[in-house]
Image (cartoon, rainbow, N blue to C red; front, side):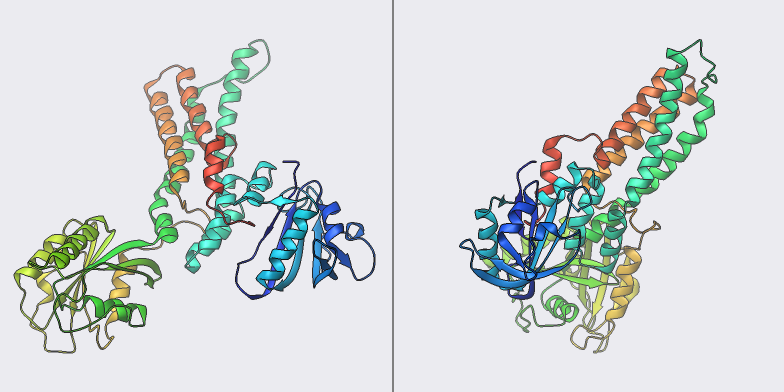
Length: 455
């Protein structure tokens, strides 16, 4: 990592401020070529984290912008290397020319996530903290942002490090007695560590159980809106979004393909898919839409089935009920409450997780739908930052938990200590993968490839 990298750390659109970031061994030499402080002193002579006013120069040495610059010397920086940031006016053209000047001075283009990857490799953060950086960038709810900040502060690291240390204590005690029998070391008895294993299992179980909610926080609930033609599916989508996203007419079969949007309901991020009306049809295109609607219902975490409450249930409504039956969670929405209702909510109580009545056209009763979603996807009983947010984390915790349970079972059965300790060491290896103590290069490459350039 001796080479010096540079990138635009802000977006590619016009903004008030744009930032160029540099990191590596030659940062001070490069920044002295590209930035000229108004004082006339070289930037490298200034102390850490002091904002200095001056001129940014292009690759020909001409003034390109008047801006601010700050440096942070290794190891007390984000990456653990000497870094610099140029805070310029947010013109994409100025930023591109400034970046070209940094390249001409000796830097190279940073790869996606390379700044954060260097921070991890230099011990400035563990893998869970690194993944929290990308979670903050992509957070779409306050809950997701707060959890990511908690992870960035080391919430998961501190919890798993404590478990790791307790397992190290067990293994080191055993090996000390085994390797130094003549020393005055307390006898090793597995039963003395029973409570330690029980506590570790309890904590990791809570951590693993948080994953479903963590996945929902970061990816959202995959929800399909289904129902017969003209039940009000598209009207409901538009009401939830707050604008006319889907075409609404009295003509059956208007929606022929799936429409996907994201919305927050009851504090939960929902990935809504509006689908074609479920009915038998000879129209080839509409039939494809119906097939896609059924596929969407089968793949959804949540099915929102819409029924025209002003008309008696039909066979098409029965088909909707059957399509919703395969979903883990489902809500029956009795629509058109602004008219005289003839459908009894009790007809759905045995087939759906929740039933609510509303008018999508008048946008009344939507709070009942929000309440139903909030009840089906409650906030987990876990401290901020201790919610797992991706499958890699959940897999590592799951393997550690499996090994600890095996160790606990072996202890209860009275097997020899080395069998118990083998499982404990497997658990330690899995926890090491979680935080990055022991992790393959291809795994880290995959993690940091999710980052944007400049982070």
